[in-house]
Amino acid sequence: MTGRADGTRWTSPLRRRSGPDWAGQEPTWRRARPALIADVLKRASARPSGNWFVVGASREIRAGAKPYGRTVGGTEVVLWRAESGELRAGPGVCPHLGAPLRDSRVVCGTLVCHWHGLALEGGPFAGWEPYPVHDDGTLVWVRLDAVGGEEPTERPVVPDRPVAGEGVDAVFTAVGRCEPQDVIANRLDPWHGSWFHPYSFVDLSVVSEPDGDGDDAFVVDVSFRVAGRLVVPVRAEFTTPEPRTIVMRITEGEGATSVVETHATPLTGEGHARPRTAVVEAVVAASDRRGFRLARAAAPALRPLMRRTAGRLWRDDLAYAERRWTLRSTGRFPG
Image (tube, rainbow, N blue to C red; front, side, top):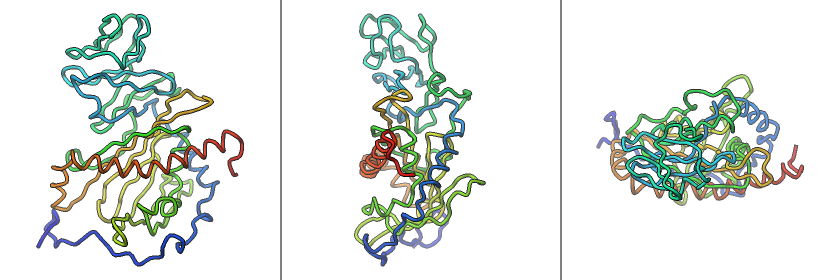
């Protein structure tokens, strides 16, 4: 019986785990060095972003649907699609009397303000200037030069993903009271995985960590818990291509080339007393197993399950990020 695209014999991705329980695992606190995490975070923060920010999932902004609103760095942004499907973006404040354009309507591809009927087709009008926008097929990005303050680029830094059409993607969004660096720092601490998330990860081992001379990648061996002692072991790599993005890519084992992109988008302006950050996480799963085509066909049913899994992890990880911000903002953060 064959079950892989290359015709080799089918093997189950599941393994029966024989390792220790939660309390019996090896402590990781000595290797999770605060100075190392801080150094990697500092280098990530220095990478150029071109002033691009992730605002949401591509499929959330549909032609003929209501406009999509998001506040980024204290700036209101509205997005919608023309009849052709082309994306439009600009300030979320009506230039006439300040109406919230996210609550307006899209009529034949034109954004029509619900206060007085002012129509915006996506080009400059009465002081309203459009924002550069990019749809990468999974996520939508908007460029806000006044918020980013960097040298602008034509396109955002979009991570490599499985070939379009060959994966199953889902996007999860949550909001926490912290800054983007707290979200990224959470992901730059892979050592907490099997301690903080034992319902999802076991037998986690960091086999390679950044040394400051390369691409700042963490390489991790970890098993995803399926049920009881049944797990799926993989090797994964964590990288930070730009300041507000961290990518986990499976490099060996089941689902190789699959990625989890975590994007941290500030909702409040810099230095806000009560900062809020949106975590926009895109999961793009892929597999060379022949049966995976059934998963692609069932993608609409799988996406809610994928979002639920991400949500469970981020319930805990946002608590981690929020705690980090609270300690930093009060001068009590260790180190």
